[in-house]
Length: 346
Image (cartoon, rainbow, N blue to C red; front, side, top):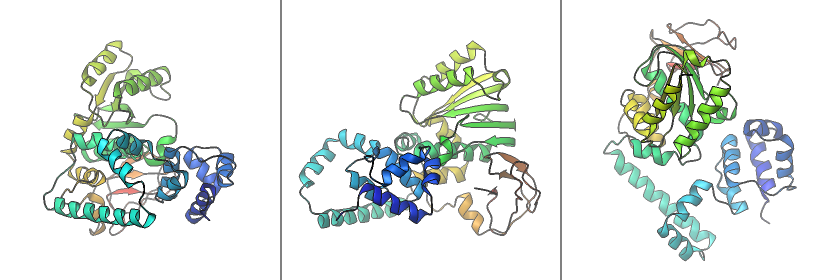
């Protein structure tokens, strides 16, 4: 007898060592909702919610999605917009489970071969790749990670950085706040408030975020800060949009960055370019990113950024300093093989 969706979810949750309440909190769902799902007292949730739950549990979503006969919205959109994919699925609907598994193995082998061949000719992510990546279910959580890495790699004298990624993006507040004594073409000098999104209609998302943050700027004084909006899509009208918002005069400055700007920014940070290239499936060649390289390096005197549980950051200029974090009371220690960007609590 095939296990129900609720039984599969309960099994995966227990294997991950999470309680129902912990899973609900991380997914920003009601505790009773998880309980009712596991006891099959409610129908399975939407496919994208299933993908979110599985990403928190650290397991592939395939089995849970198959038990509900649902597809993630990104997959459904690609299939519905591709005539060849629809023809293939129509012709393959009578395949047995064994035949599907054999087909999947052949496809994986073909993809592996293609990736090995492509690795012989280094290719790094470009604006087109970022636009395609924006439709993936993990893009909303990874976009702040990309921006954060770029800021740390290219801006000078960062005195404050708060920019959550992954499941942390589900919490309230700005997508990021940054204080830079010395910025660059992409990071403003002084205080900046960052909003970002993967919506294929970047102007609508930018308008909504600008309106929301201007009406309720939280602990940021707009007259002393720059508002920055980031999208991994191409946005031809971004300069006009930013100019119109600057004319209003409520923020010290307003900027917008799109896929082409991110690609230009990446050329200033090789290790970040390698990281995002691997993430989108490109073969950047025989180049090690910072995290991989650091595993084999002994520590030396260098500056770094200390990331605390509170999601905040501050600069450090010593390789062996052990003074506690001002936000979470954890000591930062640079041990042999530790990365230069050290996270004490994540």
